[in-house]
Image 1: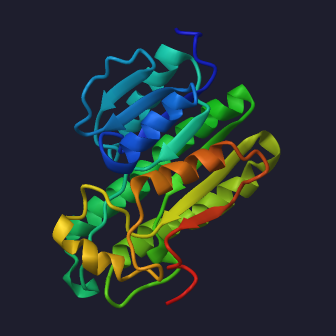
Image 2 (image 1 turned 180 degrees about the horizontal axis):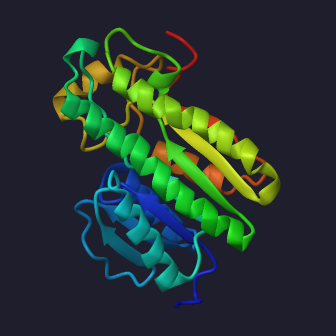
Length: 237
């Protein structure tokens, strides 16, 4: 077990996009990081432990937390970043779509958060941040996405519920609610159309979401917060 790191963060969906940015940001803060995704490559950084696995399988959550504790001895922050987004008209969703989206977005959130909270209670505190979507608060007829609202909306509600349940026990629970962010998920040719969905008429950058996660990490009086980083989408159109 290493004692050189005072704090340890676990990041899901950590191989690219926002997740990879969050890993870098926590390393800059001096945290060790346990980074997981289905395709993540090993890291040369002794402060990063990578664990491959599908977070929709609860066994992956067990392996990630066990490996993090074995290597670093503690877990201070969990960033639930892994997510799947499938935009389709409601009646066109298939059973496979349903299984995929609920598997990653809900089952993936549930088990690793349970395990992290158990460890945080033993340590006397911690912080959980989940990434949701502004479509939860502001549905858009241009982007039919009931499965995103069903799953990420559940996480938004669970964030508040967990924040209250553990408010006196040192565990803060928050969420970042992005608009549409420039990540590998969105092909370049869709960017103009996606930008127009936001009142500010542009997409967000990955750094906007990473900065929001870091803000919440360093905000000891903030819990139960859904921080909208969405170019005004949640305010209206």
